[in-house]
Image 1 (tube, rainbow, N blue to C red):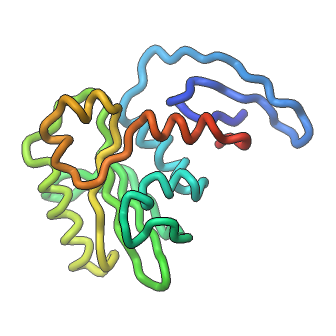
Image 2 (spheres, rainbow, N blue to C red):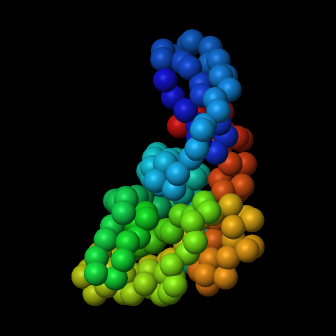
Length: 171
């Protein structure tokens, strides 16, 4: 059983090669941020095109072929938690992508600043040489939340959904 996304709300059955996929409509009672974090982790780690939804927002990484070195959910320290931390490599240089995921929860005051503090710690610890702080959220959330607008890099759920719906081979 493989599914393309909670965003699209479809399951595709096809346990064996050569077996036709069958679309099944699935209704989710609720989708929590942790569900989406897990989906994003899987998609970033397994689909370079999905990763590029994020890295193409960064001028120096735009259209580059990157290798994912690591992905971590809920990386925490005394300055808070990064929902998703991705370390990618290009030409022997590592970059940290620190991603905040929001569906509808109210952003904590100075949340974006704390991501920047954690990013700087990652440089100091030698995890990567540069970092980029993202928020991924529904467009409506981003439009209405002032803290969300403070993030330099933004990827919408709608952009993720459009990408996933365009794929023939599903996650």
